[in-house]
Amino acid sequence: MFELFLPMLERLGIIVTVAFIITRFRFFRELIDRKTLDAKDRYMAIGFFGLFGIIGTYTGITYDMSTLEFGSWATGLANSEAIANSRVIGIVAAGLFGGYRIGVGAGVIAGLHRFSLGGFTGFACGISAVVAGIISGFFHKKDQPLKLKTALFIGALAETVQMGIILGVAKPFSQAWGLVQEIGMPMILANGLGSALFLLIIRNVLNEEEKAGAIQAQKALKLAESTISYLRKGLTEDSAKKVCQIIYDEVQVSAISMTDDHKILAHVGQADDHHQSGEHIQTKATKQVIELGEMVVAGHDDINCKHEDCPLGAAVIAPLKRRKEVVGTLKFYVRSEKEVSNVLLELIQGLSALLGQQLEIAEAEKAQELAREAEVKALQAQVNPHFLFNSLNVTVSLIRTQPDRARSLLIALSKFFRQNLGATTKKWTSLEEELKHVKSYLLIEETRFVDKLHVTYDIDDEVLSARIAPLTLQPLVENCIKHGIKDRDGDCEIRIMMKKDSEGVRISVVDNGSGITKTRLEGLGDQEVDSKKGTGLGLYNVNSRLRHMHGTKAKLQIESEEGKGTTISFVIPFHTKEVSV
Image (tube, rainbow, N blue to C red; front, top):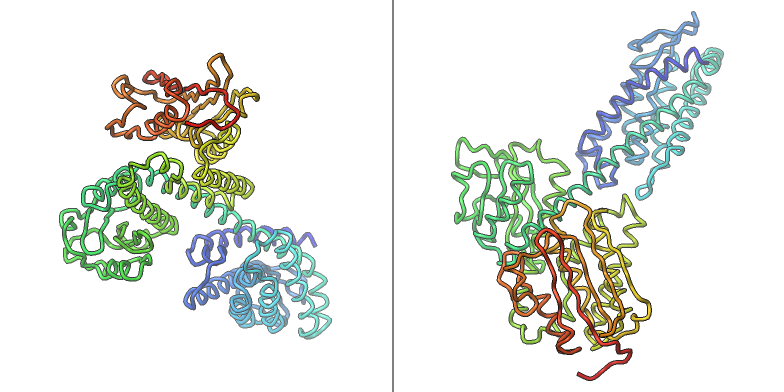
């Protein structure tokens, strides 16, 4: 037994190498990711898995029943010869991941090839190859991940069935029985192990896909955060050029372009000498994206560039939507279609969705300007769409890798927005409820910052019953994150304190961020500040409400030094019941 088993294990190394190469192909990644395959992809899968089975046959070990000796590579067989091989691994993999059609198709190809080599088991092995495809197709589960022990069992089962077919079909029976006794157990064990190894390789591929997806999600979020200040001005030539430049600096492509629904707004990168802003859209693929609202991969002929020496060989074109209406496109140009990877497609798809959401935010902010007189109620009803979209995208990236953490994040997000909406009907709330609201918000932000943000609480339990205006504390904490610690590489800290003293309840929010310059500190909280980093409207609104609801002594006190963090504090009376103002 070991005389054959050990050489077969050595040959498995070749099969594993071939399996790894197959996993590099795009159609195979889509197959194992449970995506729908079209007819062309199915035929490619059948061909590849059939080839995999043929390789398993050729790498087998011949066995001569007349001399009882093992040979080397299997290329042609005499009537007294058979093959100990790993053909079944490719067929089992085809059925497990593609179902009956791909499993049987691969079995037919590998079986016909085996039959053509001859030998007294040629016909029996040809039949068993098809049967292996049927067996593995039976265990195909479209929406359930496969387990290693399942693959081990199916590989061993398929080989066991083959041994039974050899005994029932191959003639003479005495040779068939002697062959099964000699090679049966080693082949069952080796092919079961080989099927499990193949699945292990697949798992590694899936992990690569998940990691790549998470990285692209983080990159898309980073790019979206970097571009939001420009897209707030709407989709213009100026904002589009700055957005394209930011994306081009981060993404390894030949060029980045943005259009509205009829002309090019910006083009950054190669071929910018003849792909210029202001020109009308000429690409049929771009017009198709605007019309249908679906992403398109355009080849060289589809780009319709009239410049003979244009280095742009292909493009991925994604729609920019605002309120489900296509208002423009985002284009990633590359040198050829071979450079269009799944990773690039996921990045542009996620980024175009986020940019479209930013355009919706820009439109909403313009509407907010018209409602500035009702700023107190607007603050209470404010739900930051950008924060929501970022949180949902982070949740999506965690669903596969960290499902429990994704669940906790969704629960925190639900609590946050429920409290946010509830605040619109309340004039007062307790510090305890306000603290819960802040903790839900910070749990979301701590997940987004990935161990970069640390929050500590120093709370006197007796003050939690004190009354305060709703949504007072959360904007202060958000201000720390957006302007204080956002640009730090790590060790970001926020400390929240609630202490009772002689004046009432002192509430402080402290961060170790970049601090505030003396120039910017002047008037902050008392008026809007014209600055590239923000207007200070959030602090201004909170300060106005504190003074209105709790008196002038409750106004914000801001202490900061550039590079040494910021402390924002205020004092409210220790009322446990609502008071009239």
